[in-house]
Image (cartoon, rainbow, N blue to C red; front, top):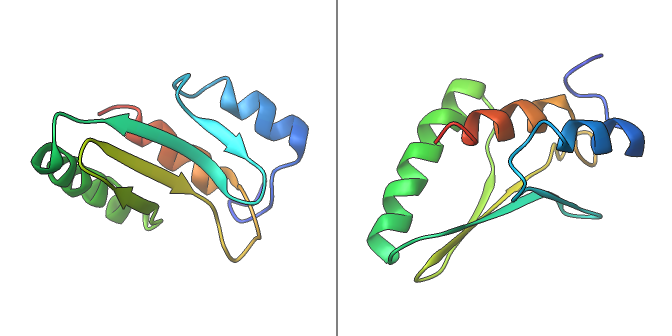
Length: 96
């Protein structure tokens, strides 16, 4: 399968089983995971770690930081949804 091929619903359901339970597939958004932090500075530090992983994968998440939460959204915009690239990046993020 090409990394940029949109995953079918069945493939996405199977792939979700390989990820941390905190990941959700949200129609129209992609894969979403919310990290709870101990404050803004910890969230910024987490973003720095995520940036290194994203650069290594040449695939970049959407990030939304509030005081004590960091929401990470993965989608392949060129494919219009979730692809294998998103799954691989989510698996790498799970190593944090």
